[in-house]
Length: 185
Image 1 (cartoon, helix red, strand yellow):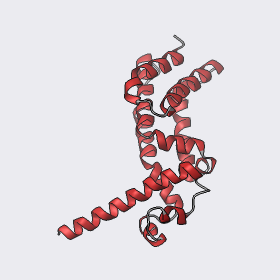
Image 2 (tube, helix red, strand yellow):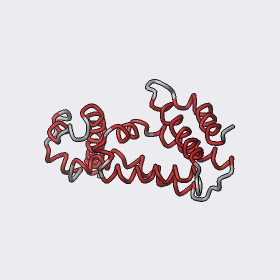
Image 3 (tube, helix red, strand yellow):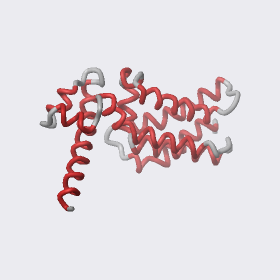
């Protein structure tokens, strides 16, 4: 039995190494600029080994973005129960901050690569972002409502994209600033 467990652990490790390597290569060379050969050569595995874990390069991308996608789905389900009260708005912004802070590298990768944005997972993530924005602006939004929502989301996103900044340290300040923009306080 231990041999079976060891084999399963090795497969999981290889899969995780492929995902981590792909994330780095996609960030450096872009999704379209990264080949299967590059993905495998840097890990010293064969293309067959990669295809054992993933059916295609797009499946690798899906694997990289799965955590962000699933977290976004969970966030949208939670906020579907929220009203537009200040308390709910602050909580939604706080949860959005946590979602991005948990996976900012993947968010940055999706946000900065047009090929990824147009991929199936990119389209789903963009749809989720539109749904979150729709919650923020509420029904029948004015131009000012749209500007406030864009500003609040931008504050969170840009604060987290600063390299070398500890997201936990500035969480409350950033969320409060985003809330103040949303509530026009």
